[in-house]
Image (cartoon, rainbow, N blue to C red):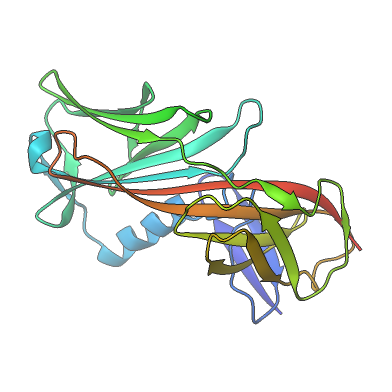
Amino acid sequence: MRKAIVLNPFIQRTMTFKSNQPIYPPTRYFYTFYGGIFFLYTILFVQTCKSPQTVDLAAGELDVKINIVDTQGPIPYSKAFASIQFLSNGRVVQLGGNSSVMCNNVRLSSAQLFYSDWIPTATAGGTYTFRHTRNQVATEVIVPVQPRPVITSPAEGASISRSTNIGISYTPGGGTGVRGSVSNRNASIGGSLQGDNGSYTGLDASSLPAGPGKLSLTREFKLTLPAGGFKSVEVTYSSGTDVKVNWN
């Protein structure tokens, strides 16, 4: 067995995992299966030990990388994590001058390597609109909400044996892949990235204690969108859902 301490601005939790399982932050305790958005960026910043250069450039001179993590599901008051990076000549930069960045009318805060905040979850058919404003000139990237997985089996509230090969059936959605996890209040065990074909297999819940828990599924997308006035735009989008189960 091994333990991992997850540190980020939202939680600090110690989790125990099987030694042959990858470690992921708990699905809903950090709002997302990935959990480490802030954490990973912080590691990158510490490793480089160098603050990004501050520049005052027009949108057309900037490359953009956007990340949206929308894994809370369609519940009241849910939020998605939205972040955006700006790059010049292949290097991450910080915006100078009078530049500002918003997403769905929420002002994004600078964290050196990226601008981010929690945004009210957009509903199906909606968008996440990122707006860069400089010298009163606004440049937007509009990211359509992507379909979250619809789990068809197991059903909500199902009793499931804690085996080493638990499967999830779901409606395929055209993502670049899906990733499942099993969890309870204190631990989350993630599986591998698999094709978005309607069937996810191989989840191992044998180390979880009996009692209430969850089965989660996150769909990943890599989107190519029109640059919209920027030099280029890349979007990574994660959309997830879960079902409550009882581990036997």
